[in-house]
View 1 (cartoon, rainbow, N blue to C red):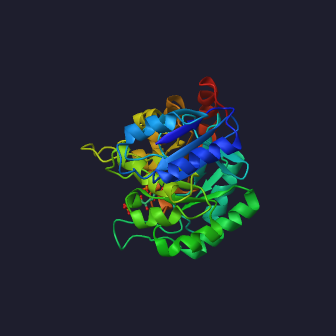
View 2 (cartoon, rainbow, N blue to C red):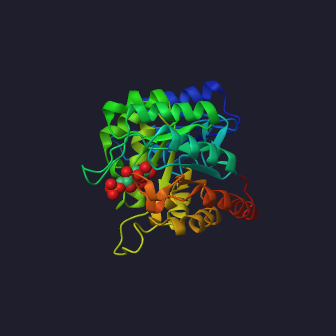
View 3 (cartoon, rainbow, N blue to C red):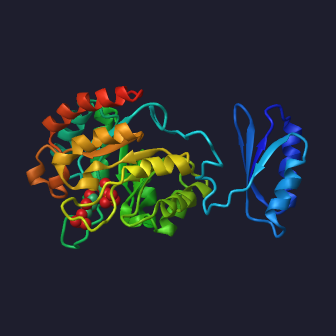
Length: 340
Ligand code: E4P
Ligand code: PEP
């Protein structure tokens, strides 16, 4: 249940409502907003909840008590009607800006990463992507540079000032990845790794949760709920394409997911057109489509020499392609009333 307090509710009145909710057996999560206080009451009481909501509504200074019947609460629009924002240094994800997160799929060497980092910074990216721990279908394909890759990412941040987004693949590596990363990426293969979600819920770093390759929107939102419920509300979602019968593209990029998330949730949504299509030729147009549909940004793979990439070269755009894309994308972003 979400309890919305009247705008002029006093501290004492809010305290009384919180106490009453706890007596009914709820765990409470208040948000003391600028306008008003909203209290999320989690854990259904044994009595009929609709009746309890009526009683809560009769308490002085309560404006409304809303039952949330969805299997996710903190991630729901009922809990927070306005869009939430995730802040990473000076970068805000979820406001009126459109964020470009770009860089190599995988950190391969100092030269490769620094060349890409300098180029994406010069082109206007505000977050640097790069994988140090790589999930791979084949155990024989490149698995990433591990901590050495994280150190190179930190070096690139030092030089360019760009915050870093990088993937954490398992619970045992959270502390290590947190030492270097500004945003933790949970990959498609781990969207339903609930132990990992619970543990990143305890971390004080923004998390970007990719959609599972066969996940329904509601399953994705429930996965986000694990993280937020644990105490970390700096969560953004990333649509990266889903599996369909189509094989011409690597995945089917579901741009309608942005609209679905907007209808159901307050969480920002990023689009990954690289994984979403698997084809570098499609990435620029899909970035523009992401802006047109109202996404909060894109995650784009850029490589100084895609033919030589150790991973995902076919979906990585070149530096000249990135330089060409940025002004074109900015024009679309501005046409829909946003900025980058
Ligand atoms: C992302 O960069 C993944 O590591 C990569 O797409 C995995 O591809 P694979 O499953 O073909 O190894
Ligand atoms: C990635 O972006 O590096 C990645 C592994 O993507 P996904 O989890 O979407 O496959």
